[in-house]
Image 1 (cartoon, one colour):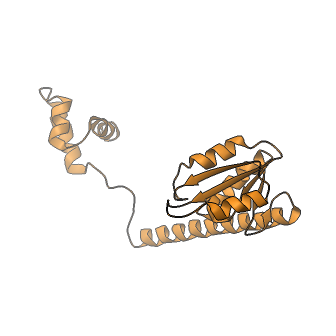
Image 2: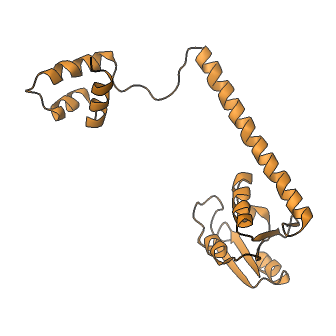
Length: 185
């Protein structure tokens, strides 16, 4: 079976062009969304993916109708592949049921992996350079040495409740106990 998925970003756009393409492809069912592709939840796409069975083909008019990023596209198509479902994009002439279509998608996957590796390498290099300049990064400590010693003094006085101590120091109970546990001498 061929299952179509069509999407437009705004109400002012029309689905006609995509619907005509799905008719020409002889799709058995067509699911649609009217929303930005960057939306996390796309009910039409979720229904289409849920409707697909092994051996079926998900058909889209254009790749950008399915996902907004290469990573998102690859994730969706890989999940289809794991289920034994094929994918076809009409405008880009990609059909994963053919060996040529599979090759093109493997190239896309390799490029996405290469891009992720480059980002990871640049991030590591940036963090290393920052450390060499004395910047540690990460979240700042809530309690410095002065606050820790004040917490210890207040805690030793049994007339102070934990809630009063936390309010005085401006920290949560969890933070207070965490610092007391790690800085208890």
